Image 1: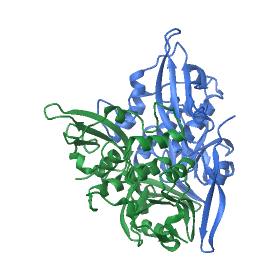
Image 2: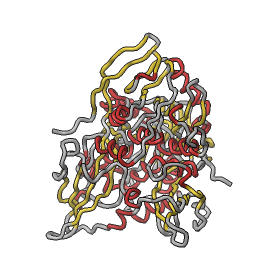
Image 3: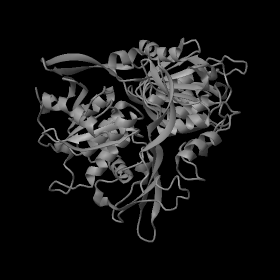
Image 4: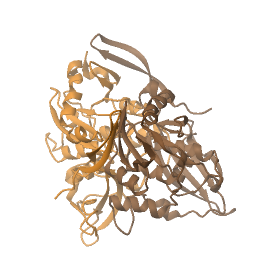
Length: 287
Length: 287
């Protein structure tokens, strides 16, 4: 029995016609703690990696995507098991703690997991350092796929995502993201109250679907669509996965644009109706 | 010379009329590290508390609001100084590290600052525990003010906020929040790429404006307007400050509604045009 991703509540609806009682659907938000088990048999250790406020559902994908985009694992092959912790002692929290078992052969860098991703000890804290941290910490995938798409195709994507945003449709409360192939077909979409969680779930789900000759998912062949704005964090995650094209319905931040340019990711923003802006790597568009 | 909150960049605008080169304005996003100095003279210690991706500007307010809404300080009187760190060794990061000096008399609970706010060791991780943590860790201000407002007044607020969202107006990239008095006058507004940062800046700015007989800012007399959705984190911060009414233009999450009900905060969502939903504490509305 999985936790529900929505909940019902009594509300009052107010309009110029007056006030009415109603039953309303809310997007669920609850904490998820991610723990990593590592070390040799007989000497297994556990480290709490993160607590994030997320919408319940697809929690294992979230954990997988998070560990991958933070550079803690490099593929699903690093993992022997993912499960909900059974030491949770109340009904409410029983599916709010996920433990990911690393294989014995996988080295787990405690310090790296401790350190906030955005800081480096060498240069202090700045936008450039944040980008450098992505480059240093991670094996960035830079393989080029077959993406070459038209304006019309890009403009058709938001409508397709909206059709798949089931919970958003009913609650208005979720961020969505989706991967589309170069023909504009929706491959997979995910939703969450946190936009970074939605993307981790999407990436985590794909990691479990090995496809290319190296046994990895070919993110480089897909377009990532974001229902809202594009922040540094989302571009960082896209870069980690090797995504080559990101289209956001909202605005990008300065650091998101810098990150896209640094990693030659095509970044599109303000994708509305028939028009959009291209912030970087326009060579993958036919216009 | 303060860091700019926007940056210019070259982009390509694509529409069904073709493609044109343009100069565009982006909302700036950069990391801010918050450090706390504490302990007795001659034995001062420093602790890095947080790194957040924020829009530069009002950084001292952000630090102040963050420390207050996380329960680390209880008023501006706990602080002797806020400054940018001078040990930052590059031009890029020189205004990205803020150090807040606690007064010698203020006890700083290292463990409390270490612990992620959303977890408690007793009950594990669940929505209820998150709300309990707010109650336990903090001196929640529950004073009741003079708020009693009409539908018409509530419906007039979004327009007033939009007029003050300067950077959003040009970049489309920022979350905004504002405090309004019970007559519907905008008192103060703040913007940021992160919605939690915008609220911390707003709360921090008010903390520096002592007003009531106790020398604290009377948050309980103001309506908080949020430009987007209402998450647990925003309601938690509002509760910490003693805000009694929160109106969001977007949807609230399940845990935001639970938190509002727990602390008797009036929570309004989907505030659009002439209508809105009331999720809790409807007694402060005249409808």
